[in-house]
Image (cartoon, rainbow, N blue to C red; front, side):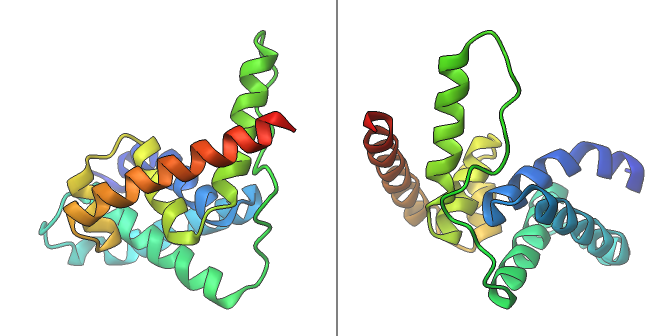
Length: 157
C-alpha cells in the first residue's frame, strides 16, 4: 500500500483517536500530522508483526500520551467540536453531551472508548493499548458504565 492510500484510509480514524485524547480539534490535527510523519519515517522498518492499522494506532497513541505528559493544556469538560446542524436537534444535543462525557474520562479510558467507537476488534485494541484482552473487556464495560452514569447525570441538568 502506498503512503497516500495509507493516509487516506487511516487519517480520519487517527484524527478521531487524537481528538478523544486531547479534546481539542486543532491539537488533534497537529497530532495526526505528527503521527503520519512518524509513519512515513518508519514505514520501511514495519515488520508485519501486527496489522498496519494496529501499528499506526500504536504510534498515534504514543504520540498523544507524550504530548499530554508535556502539556497541562487539557480542557476535560469542553465539547471537542460542534456537531453539524441536522434535522434532529435532540440527537445533536445527545452527541455533544456524549463527547463532553468522553472528555471527562482519564486518558487511557478516552483512548479505549475512541478505539471502540472506531469499531476496532478488541484484540487490536489490546495490542494498541498494551492491555490484555480479558482486562480490556472489563475496562470497556466499566467505561461504558461510567459514561452512562455521567451522561444521565448531565442529561438531567
